[in-house]
Image (tube, rainbow, N blue to C red; front, side):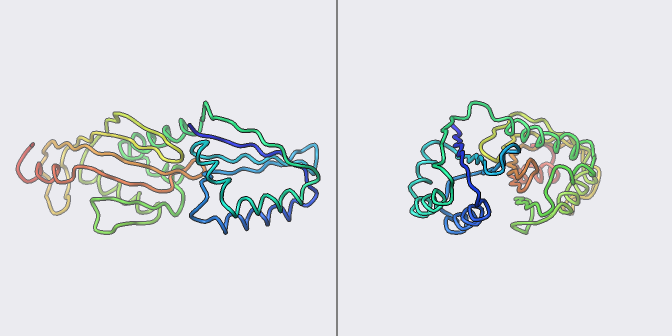
Length: 234
């Protein structure tokens, strides 16, 4: 179960606290288990701050607290506060962001891929989106234009639709299991259009940053699709 910790503190030296947090982030790179952090300032009191830190689980939070860097930075943070910070430990029982991320993933399949609304790509994907596609020679491609070009290419080669069977959301990732069905109407990997009905299954995992798709991994039955184009339905 996702775990969150609320740290409530008062300080007149927030700039120093902020620099301390930057130092902690740098020193714990590759070791920290926190997945998200947000700091808010009280509009009614200039010295009142609240930080919300999210972890995959309570156990991961404890691992994070046990890091030597965390212990040292916390001691220095306390010295910058006007009084001892208070902590509230929360088991997350509802996370609306997971539902929003799942809805964004569905919008890509339904509105961008199937309906051809390419303008929506700028809304759904970050600018330097990273894509990992088993159907490409390149192990990784970067940028919204790559997604736009890929969708255009598939839509030129096939009149297709997606059936989304299930979605699993965990942390900042959403995995979607799907079946794709298309009619071969344009050149595809050297195969001239045949008008043939084809089908394949696959899974796409999207990683999100700030509500937008930041990275994607595509796993699908391309060999089955190629066999159908070469010798008829399998």
